[in-house]
Image (cartoon, rainbow, N blue to C red; front, side):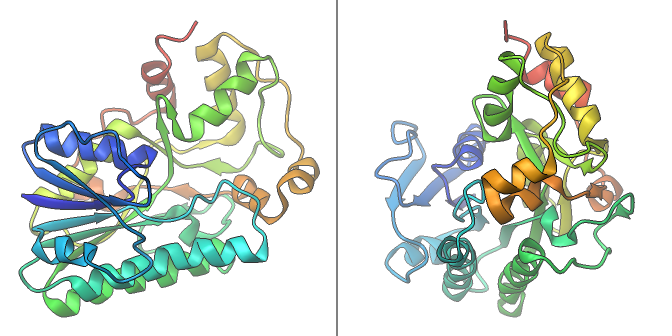
Length: 301
């Protein structure tokens, strides 16, 4: 298949592009970087483009068999009013321009969302049927998913991927957590009782392949492992794998002083289950956090 990946120079986008190439697909990567790092790979084309604006890049979308939409400004940055607007526009405008370029000839659109859709829900078990929350990320996720689902009106099969925290080696969330633990300064965030929903990068890539290849898969999917854990449990597991204690909590008030509104994202409780992936037969290689962290950090000193 000819697959377009937006946000292809990011942590997940680079890994996904390489994975799809290994599976025998041809890949066109889109993003604002000057290069993606994959230009030497056969079957890969890089198009530098601001996808929040319409342009010639949309021709690649129209010509593709499928699109995986990962584009969006990072949320791991202080949320000023201006930056929140950039977070929203980078997702909604890009998705709108993708959909406007698609035709009935495009087989499938996989578009990212987030478990932030649910807001903070305590101990409630959250499958794909659970209602949306009402905070900034929840409202954004609702609008983002609606923009992608508009492609169904053109006969395109659409699958929404609600990402949990992606755990992978060499980038993403772990690259921010591990240094603190190695310096004996790691520990749970807030009171540590909030539920933490995560997914190993290997399983994320496998789930993308699963949805692309299964022509009956459409609608919303939670992209997180079956084994959601409380934040304090995750911190202990990470400390154990690294051979470090997990004794230094980051109090909620300190996080909010340092990060402002963005700190709420780290303190919410979301006990999410990947019900639809399980029902449709997807098998997780890393369903529990101990095994996932051991795999990702096995070479760590």
